[in-house]
Image 1: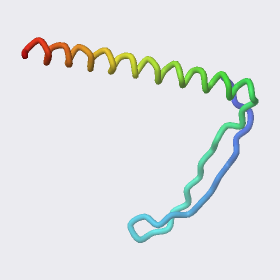
Image 2: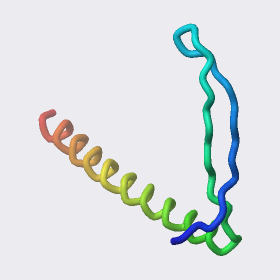
Image 3: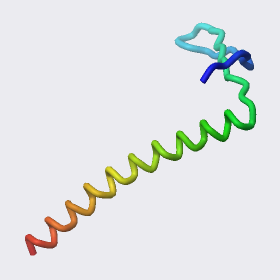
Image 4: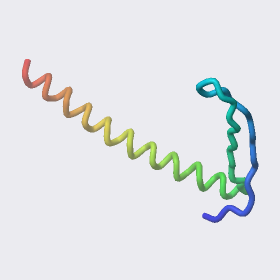
Length: 67
């Protein structure tokens, strides 16, 4: 996915007694690009959830079997 333009945000922060400039670049996406990115993120989060939910179920089964 290519991004042609970015929104730039600047702010200053104190770090170890010195003032530093922070600059954040955020891609400007079309509605379709935002929707595609959101679906991709949701899919990745679901995969992580399933991975850890499965391992949790296995751990609980082992604990029950010990009793």
